[in-house]
Amino acid sequence: MTHAIMTHPPESIRQTARWPDRRILDLFGISHPILLGPMAGAGTPRLAIAVGEAGGLASLPGAMYQPDELRAAIEAVRAGLPGRPLNVNFFCHTPPVPDPVRAMRWRTRLAPYYVEHGLDPQATPPAGGRAPFDATLCALVEETRPEVVSFHFGLPDPALLARVKATGAKVISSASTVDEAKWLEARGCDAIIAMGLEAGGHRPTFLGTDVAGDMAGDMSRQVGTFALVPQVADAVGVPVIAAGGIADARGIVAALALGASAVQVGTAFLLCPEAKIPAVHRAALEAAGDDSTALTNLFTGRPARGIMNRVMRDVGPLCADSPAFPLAGGALAPLRAAAEAEGRDDFTNLWAGQAARLAPRLPAADLTRKLAADALSRLAPTA
Image 1 (cartoon, one colour):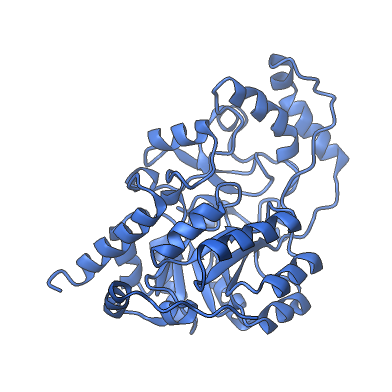
Image 2 (cartoon, rainbow, N blue to C red):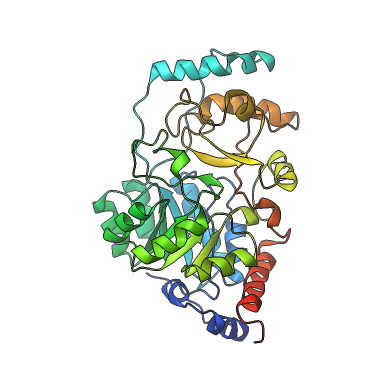
């Protein structure tokens, strides 16, 4: 059955009424136009519950869970956030055909690091750990019935998408260009996330010169958030959610002024105690500046924004030898474990957007409330 949306408490009602664009609030049944970015690896049920309790949209990353683990995570959020909406996010990549030659080139690139850490460079690396949306995960959506289902790297097969929509879920996906936004709208998305180049984590690009996903097109032509949002808002009729480089109230107000109905915030929540990141990632975030990040395909095989570290500097952030998504990370896993055990981030994917140092260091519920209150005060300073 579809979960009913809890009645907003009085203060939430008053604040909801003050937002200038209600489309996302009404579509998802939330108090504030703030979506938690569904960050694979870092997202937890505790983080989702905290954001949902504060009036934003709770989100869970489905791509790195096994089905039973995802079911348990959804149940945990349902128990901790009764009657409130939940977004579950999935990847839509096509699993790559193994390329032994390319895999060998990659392992040869990494061999000196293996020797340095006393590891066997001939050992078979583990496989990558991100599963695409398939019939098994679709059945889980039908069973658990999240109010929102979001996708990255396009949309799933039309038959699977139809099954998702038949549950009553609102469907959203991310676009990195106007053409991608129009493609998503034409295939039934209820809202579109316009994700600018500033965003941390994986670029959502799915149309371009390389739709197989290795480099997913020319990253040098990617568009920034505040150029992308108004163009997408002009091109589609569904509500637009801005993402990328938004970490405080100023970014929210700017996004709304440019035509967005809501924002998706990821990096700003990484330093919340409810997020799950290794100590080396937290330390890197604390020290990050405006120019600390770069797009890299070293950790998964697909471009993603993260804080520069040793392997990115040594190899170069983008490398043609890196295996196709999501296979690249397997060979780095033993190196990451060895370096993190010594307190170093040399081989860790330090996902972060360009506005990391703007983020307040607060628990997730407090951060959500602060973002909303500060944005509202800027939108209506005399109210």
